[in-house]
Amino acid sequence: MNPTPERKKSKRSKKAVAGITAGSLAVVLGGVAALDAYDVFPELPGILTTEPAIEVQDVPSPHAQGKDVPAPASALDDSAPVPTAIPDEVDKVLSDAKVKGFGIEIRDGLSDDILYAKNENKPRTPASVTKVLTGSAALLTIGGEKRLSTTTQFDPSTSTVTLQGGGDSLLGAGESQPGAVNGHAGLATLAQQTAESLKSQNVAEVALDLDTSRYSGKDFSPGWERVDIAKGVITPIQPLMIDTGYVGSKDKEWRGRSEHPAKDAFAVFTKELKAAGITVSKDPQPADATDDDAQTGDEAKLTELAEVESATISEIVEYALVHSDNVVAEVLGNEVAIAQGEPGSLEAGPQAVLDALSDTVDLGQTHLEDTSGLSYDNQISPHDLTTILQASVVADDSLSDLIAAMPVGGLTGTLTDRFTKDRNAAGAVHAKTGTLSTVTSLAGGVLDADGRYLVFTLQIDDVDKDKILEARKTVDDIVAALANCGCR
Image (cartoon, rainbow, N blue to C red; front, top):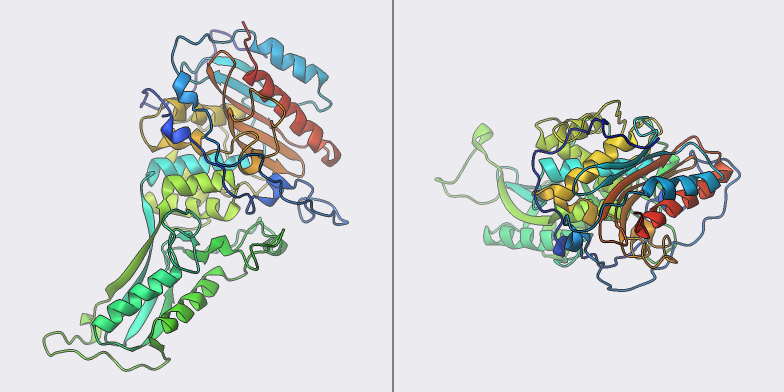
């Protein structure tokens, strides 16, 4: 149906200013090897598809390198005309579509006026579009500039070094890489700094311990399938892991993930600490101490030896959205819970995400079982998703980074091979994809041909598996029509 003037607007963020800065929307093409399996390959065999197994195609190759994406914020002003004929354009696409039953909402990015709505209040299975909620909650509650710390602590009474996981799922095995997001903090650097600190205290031999207590409860959701670990879709969610738990050579077309990512990271740290000149023993001698420094029993205190920090939360959110990485999204869900004073757990994460957004969006019937979108039991309506997108356009805090962090049509992430043949849509569509075997979704923003910024959500679920690509084509055709819209 088409919107009417009497239509009640959604609950909006109280913070409203200019919007997304041009700098924040300059996106440079990154690697796509870690893309979410079900966004890149909707036909991937497993619990979400039928047997027999279908051969998986190669990850799409990028079409451009190092190209700055046009910044929608450069045109976010009231002088650009608001399109009035969008219903005609969208209905034209829908009338030709081979798949019916879409939920759609399209709004003006600045005014929040609803330009088109159809089945917009019906909750649907969103697939990886769930990550829009997770990313928004992380930006709002943790803060875009916050970093996650991985530390080592020392107990001189037992000469034990404890490696403490701090939620960084993008640790590198080698030295820290300040210019990277994946590998920004490196375990080799942490081991070297730890060794230097120990040597300054005349400690040459230590025992090692691992602390993963930052996260509690089960580390694998009952709604997920263990077979998806080997397929690279998910891994046990633990507060310490290298490269989101991937195993095997990065040169391979397809990689699985580990069954025990924290244990793997601990083994790498142990190796690097030994390489840095520290003997690791099961029964080391306590460090020497003066009478004044000596502490026994309950008086003994852990001291921090070294620390490495992750990329910023804004950068991690961007990584989760562009790569549609389920592991990073679930870790962010745990961190949102911690930021709100709740346990960092898979049980607490989904509700914590919803609670974090309660001041921005009227949640209606939204329901989350996880924070990545793997669960078919997640339910989100187009109306609620578009409300968050529009709030990000006018936000003056970290939430303004949201749309900028999404994949870019024809250039990055899960949109690398979409909108490539449409000159106006390529490089101008910023959107999060969602794909399961019977679901396709797209939510984001686009600058139309007249310079007006529009936000949109398009969803459909319960699609026959052999028609899912047709459904995706309809979604892309609608968004391309918005990009080309002079629509007055």
